Image (tube, helix red, strand yellow):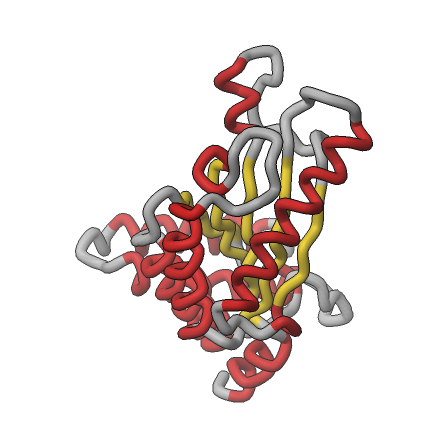
Length: 216
């Protein structure tokens, strides 16, 4: 019977959203977040502190608060030219093509990209209860060692610019993944272009989660 609870709850979420076509993205996010919090609270051990929304028994109200907060931030990020925003549970991912941010084989930010990243920084500063990981990726052209270094330098350049625009340094971490995480086929130029990218991973802080739980 316990195995049926997540499935029945998911079906209930689908039914609710299907009958609520007029809901905004933010309102739907609150519904999903709240339902997810309730389902996960029954299905996952409370000792699992990783991925608080997806695995931390936070409850329906806290899940709705966190989902609402993330969806509002996503809506503003979507206004940034050249950015692709996706919501994956308790995480926002913001992707930028490297041809927008950098010249080929360079790690210095292009002048035009600075306006885009300045807007990103404005959004991040409006939502201070989040932490950010800047992730750099490359295609498979060149050696593994070179690509790893290039991805790290590009991620660091974005991190430094965000800090320059007022985003607290304690909130940001930069990581390079080289060519190890392709999202397209490196056998084609179009695929390699997709793989040359910088992404932001945005998650709410533990302190925000605790405050949300206190309201539940």
